Image (cartoon, rainbow, N blue to C red; front, side, top):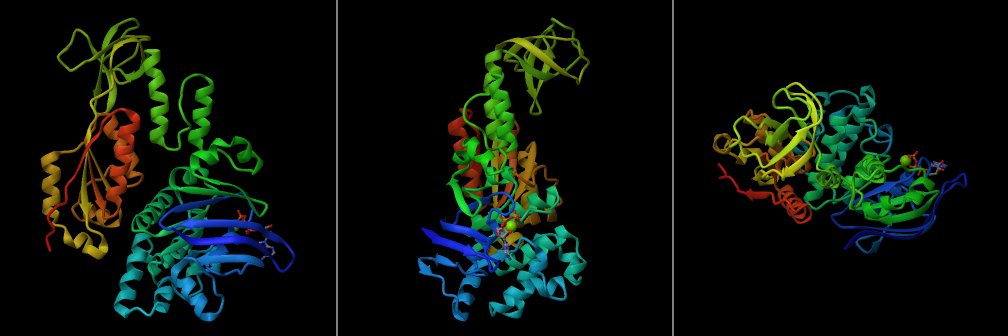
Length: 458
Ligand SMILES: Nc1ncnc2c1ncn2[C@@H]1O[C@H](COP(=O)(O)OP(=O)(O)OP(=O)(O)O)[C@@H](O)[C@H]1O
Ligand SMILES: [Mg+2]
């Protein structure tokens, strides 16, 4: 079902600039849509139509099938349903303090004071800005302002979240954190629409991409379709995601094959197969080696290592090869003439669902049980995905290997033979399982997974 539809939308600014030129668009409920396009393409203008900040000069926008009403009541309804993060936080942050700013939206929702306080604190905590609650927004750095603006929308909990360049100005860690929070909100069923110049982010995260160019929609489709159209990408001043560029360079040199990858996982898949055919591998020297020496190959802690053939050969070596150059223990080497198979036995992924905040969150979890599960299984890697899960892990004092890009990192680790345990909040679990199942289908390597709810302590 489309939650927002629009037909024949044209928008002309008062000075005569036609920023949108007779375009149609629609966003499916629960989906993530990225709007791409160079400076001045019309992205912000389009997004400003979605919460009725702008009214089309021509054409109609519909919310759940009903045409937008631009009277007071209509606007109130639209702005309750559609939360907006403006491109420039200075257009958004107007209250005297950060706290008051984030509380502004929830106050308009006529919530109780306790609920407002809870939402505001939670939102500020999520974006890492709780320590700045009493500061005037105009004293914050650009990235901090962006975080506060995002907190304002999170606190509203709208069904649809529209974000104009949500990651612009954020540092890499901050960017990953914000995406993860938004991803969790999406897993709860919220629709996300964002503009960005980050093609890598659009490729890996969006269900659908719109490419805007000079006020028109140049192309609309799933990421693989969009990035397969190289001519359109260059005509519209965009660039290909780094993975795809790298893949193409390897492909023309005969090193990678198959479809264009969109993620690290696809990329690893696309390069590993041809290496099997070449009968060559890079590895870490387990001991000093000489050119021409015969070695065994094993996966050790998820890394391909050589072992001496004259050493303990019971050590599950299923592959052998010849060293191509002298190297000391621990150095990178190339091994050729490989016989046997070096596909490691895959590790397994154990998912521990953690209740969402509304289901009691971290308070519903007995930390001792968590520590016991980890002690029993002693996984090689531990991950936490989603806000409640992260709180649980932090409270239990557990070191986490994966806190961002958790699904991919876990699958990549399992493919290297490592066992992974991931604490995942509510709605994220299904998505995780789906990704593992998809990977199992495509990669031909079966990762075993289990998901076991822990006993709630409430
Ligand atoms: N208030 C305004 N008055 C007149 N023209 C405007 C106004 N705001 C934007 N424009 C023009 O409308 C066009 C689309 O601008 P818009 O801000 O939507 O682009 P954008 O795709 O968001 O670009 P950016 O990547 O730089 O944010 C541009 O040509 C811009 O100059
Ligand atoms: Mg813009």
